[in-house]
Length: 184
Image 1: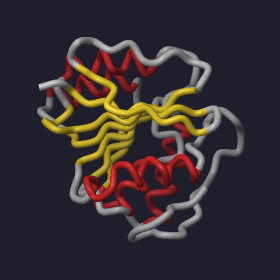
Image 2: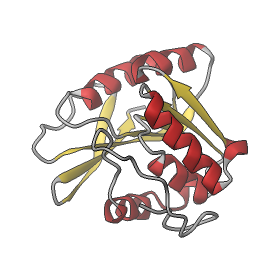
Image 3: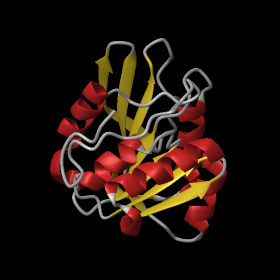
Image 4: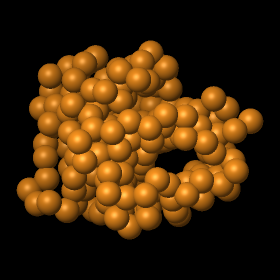
């Protein structure tokens, strides 16, 4: 697992020693960022279910202005911290521990907003749909913002309120990425 391009290009990230964390494959990550393109420059990014920090750090490397990482696992957040340090991204990154929905609610109450929200939760637990419900009520996605959600191809698509629409869906082997935007 490595940073594909940008400021930290080629940096090999620390990976978990067990299978509790499932990092996004490099080929999937490369395709996602090909779709997002230059929109990531100067963006405020939220990487919920951060795991290793792989997605958020790729955003940072490609020019995102700031990245907030959320995970409830202390072990995952230690790994994220090590990867942030390895990329020398400490000045632009913040780590928050806790349940993603709870932390997003707190961020909303603090008036924080994000251009991109990455959701890469454990598969098969309905967490993408649950987070979309939270995000719909939290008002943390900036106008024109995008939610990038990863799920198993075996899972049904996320449950959407009338506030969101799947703008694009891409399948990569056993992984599906949903690009979700808020309706105006």
